[in-house]
Length: 64
Image (cartoon, rainbow, N blue to C red; front, side):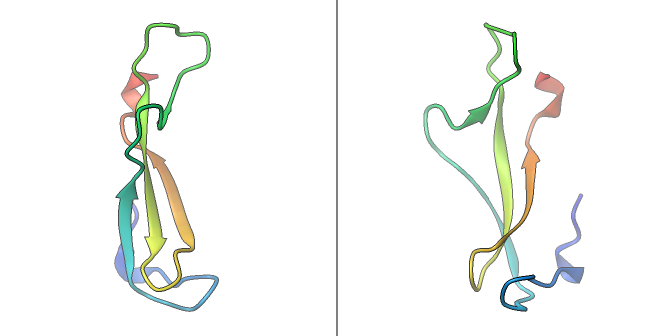
């Protein structure tokens, strides 16, 4: 897991990061070739000051 305490934003130099998840009906990563999978939401870790994304992570990799 990413340690937020040691991050520095590449875009603005900010040091405060937060996590967020896209909330929409189809905002999931789906496995290729698995028709009946529910997939997994994606978690973004981003700079609270400017919004630069530091990390994109699959919430439930076991779905793949």
